[in-house]
Length: 389
Length: 218
Image (cartoon, rainbow over all chains, first blue to last red; front, side, top):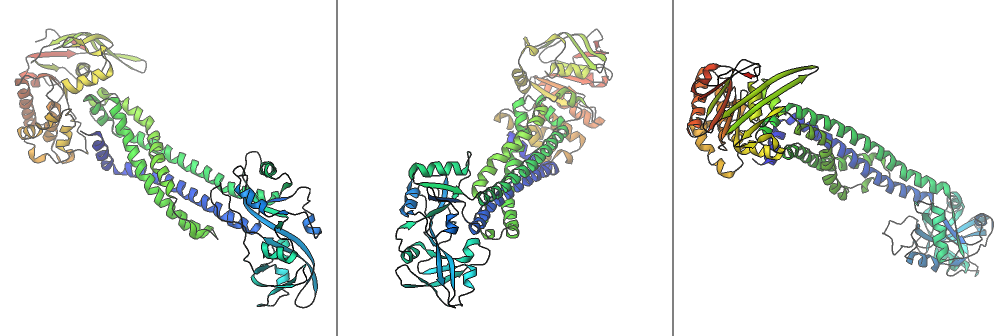
């Protein structure tokens, strides 16, 4: 008789035992899939939240002090094409989301009421796509040409529907549609105006110039800043890199926290389920000792007996792994709506996880049935078959 | 066919050692019907399982067609059981999740043997029960199923451990006649029973008591 058929028949006969084992697999795989899916969603969520907080690495002309951006009107500049060259480089991978920026103080902006203020002007170049790295969603905010985003402090002085006006270094008055009025609490942006880079360069007469690149450091083994500095300076020795470590650390910590938390929880649930499965298989073997004794008496090899036990674990592991994948994806989708603000609607089943479920869970459950399986091969047929009850 | 020489088997339970069989020598020829009788605890089942390759004796040899059974490796002993032996037990030991015909098929190692299932089912009045599960069978039907399972692969040697122990007189008689049929067709039988009446058909009766053969062997 085909041993596989024997396994299926036994599995269906001892439904309670099989269902409990199946339940442990489904539980473990559901938890694993849910946590993994949510941790991925959390990474995306973090990315979106961090977009609000800004990028963590600043690339400046060498010798520039960060404080200059808050205290002087003119800092050292460098060509905006540097951004494109970095993005085109094969060896430059420690930094992502390269955004070329021209940031200057504008000491005498006159508001619509006639008052003069010192404000900060930001010109944003569209985020550069790194040619040799996998595509990612852009992080920085792009400003459309001909429009501006106005900081909350300035916004209060400009009536709704009015344009933003500013005098250029050429003496001309430039007008821009206000595409966005930023909420308060954006730091220096509260007293600033964001332009498309080309627009600001024209206003200031600084065509092709920028004075910093904002970017995001990688999670590198030997440190973000060290790596980034090394790679940037290998291409442009006249640039230096500095870091807003609080943002970088917060970002990195947030990203790693969910992964760590998930890894512990998955391991705990998985080990608990495997232990329960091992005990259930042990109980199953104890109940079946006469059947196994009979199979041995009929000349079946220890390999076949081991197969009968392990195959059951394989079938249940496979069925539970697949069911758990779908259950886990549904749970993640449901919980994601409750947990995440920005990425809730983006939580979809991660289909590559299905392959892992199909391979991993049968393997793990076969492993947990291994010792009971070996015990089954050691059953003394003569002893069990001669017992009267 | 089967030759046992100076078989010794002891069991240890805690600090106590119990001698199950001692100085057992016995020759069973092809076509013999050997009944091993004796009271409970005499070592009958131990002797049967030693012949069946399931209990390794502490000393002595078991020769099957001249080959020392316990000098072979486990794989060969398994193969020997599969191809040469049929087992019957007092408790039937049918797989509860297999039907009558599936339980019988369990012992088939060759597709040709499966063709005989219908014949034996008919012969044992089990045709109507072939798709029933053991829980739906009477005691007699269960033992007849176990009998077919034991002989379906046409083993040369049938080892029966108290096969009628759980049966009433009517079912015992049916089973005995089936075993006798198997014997008449050339099969060799070793049957263990505590009931001397069962040994009636045998040409070789071995009386065991306290692990020793009471001579003479008839």
